[in-house]
Image (cartoon, rainbow, N blue to C red; front, side, top):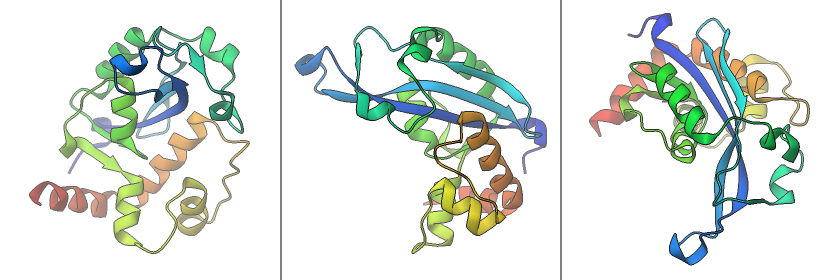
Length: 183
C-alpha cells in the first residue's frame, strides 16, 4: 500500500486542435494539453499551469474551447509543452498517479508512467458500477453527495474531487490495480 507522500493527483484539460502536419502524422484532429494541475494527497497544489499549443497544433478549434475553463489567451501565456513535460515527470516519478482518463492525459502530454502506478477513478467506477455514469459530475453526486457544476469547475477543483474519491476508495482501488496487472 502506498503512503500519502507517494500519491499525486493529476488533471489535464485537453482541447482539440488541428494538426498542421496533416498527412505526415496520420492525424488531423488531435487532443493537446491546455492546462495541467497536480496536487498531493492532502489537496495542496504542486503544479498548475496552462500549456502553449505546440507549433504543429496551431489551430485550436472553437468547439473544443466552448463550455471550458480554458481561453485561447490562456494558452498563449502558458508554459511551453517541453517545460510542462519535465515538471510533470519530476512530480510523478516514483509516485502513484490518481486521476480520470490518466493514460489519455499522459499520452497527450507525451509523458510515460508505469501502468501499475496509475489509479484511474473512471476505470475503477466503471468496474464497480458497470451500468452507471462515470462522469465526474455524476460520481461526485453518487459517491460524495456533492454537486459538481460543469461550467464553474476548473482543473484544480476537478483533481481535488478526484482525490477525495480516491481517498474514500483507496484500498479497493489498490486491489483493483493489482487485479488489472495480473490480467
